[in-house]
Image (cartoon, rainbow, N blue to C red; front, side, top):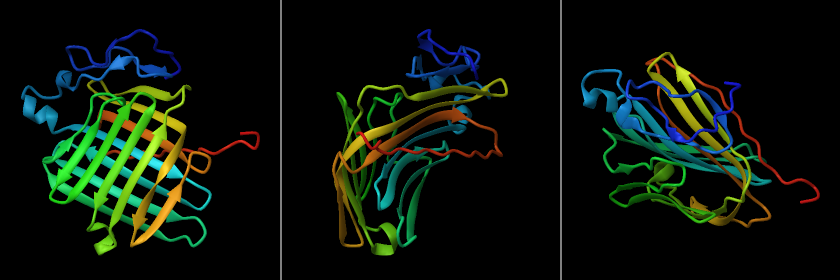
Length: 228
């Protein structure tokens, strides 16, 4: 994983293996899940693919996140909120069979969506701005969660990893930190607002095929320097 990948091209070869493993600062490889070939049957391969777009917002007082994910046999949305002062933690998850209602982009620049009844998750990118919209009235046993955030992806390096897991399994991941964020969310009837000088966003974009039994640890930190 100490090799810098700079050549553009597909992520997976025709045999389903990573063409090149290593790291980069931008996603130079094109995610092509149609080349996943664990099994001779295409449908079985699709059931093993894991995909997610995770956004997190950090302020001095709290952390809040929203995720759209598809794990092959199911789709998941989840939101959680952590109050740094009171230690309050609120989360909720919704699962749909076979990922019904989910659309995830092939790159971190593509849009992702989820729609079911009156629940809507929309992640969009236009130019240097990312837009997160969430409407989830049933969140938290009826507390409700509604959010609209604008995130500025200022030009800087990100962390991109092309990690093999055996021969035909892999993890392709991009983490973009320190993106100024502006917006608000309503949780349990209370509105929380923040602006570009108060909040930083992180995007964790992941695509891959893992072992049946897996675990991982990751951490991310973003904040402002005293001199801005």
